[in-house]
Length: 250
Image (cartoon, rainbow, N blue to C red; front, side, top):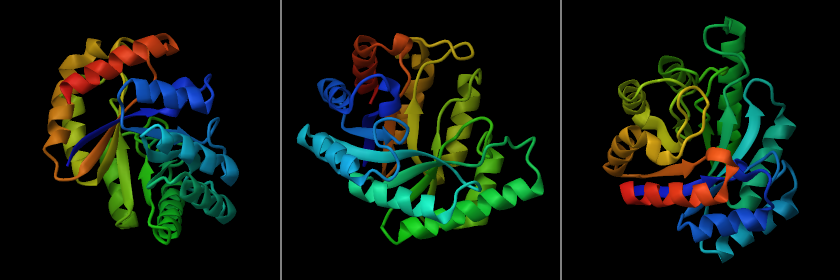
């Protein structure tokens, strides 16, 4: 089905919702992942419906509800609120975090709590036809591939998926190996150009990574999101240039 391009709204935390939608639409993108920290707060269903309408009026789709729920540290009321917010937003998936401790530091109890929490979230979301997708991120149990796959297999929920993004300072070949290993469960890739460390560059500076990533995504029989995030200088102008490069590679 190909690659669906989009924007992660936290890229422009400083902008109101209507301006975020305008930036995405003018850049020719197809979808937005709406963040739960500023633009779509957890439990505010009236706002979530308003954001959904604004998104759709501009011809865009909602890619996900980017929550900041930490599996293993979430009560059932928060889970229900997240599912209700995602439903109001029209989001097909909820992004969550796999705990708040990295794989190397995690004890058995940490992993059990995260695994159980992911299972509860996935079960609750399934009733609404919504996926749960784990952020691939340092200082969580998805900070490396083996731990991520272990979580996916241990939970065993058909609606539990994962994101991927290039870890800081990992070279292109290692990034592509990670992507391939996670492909069976992959729903979304966060696209940005940081090098070295967290220095933000124009997306074109990492063309050697993103061209083969997008080529690989394009041959999958399902739709996978490629969502731009965290542009240089938080600049809408740079974002527009990055979006043009993303489209040229897709």
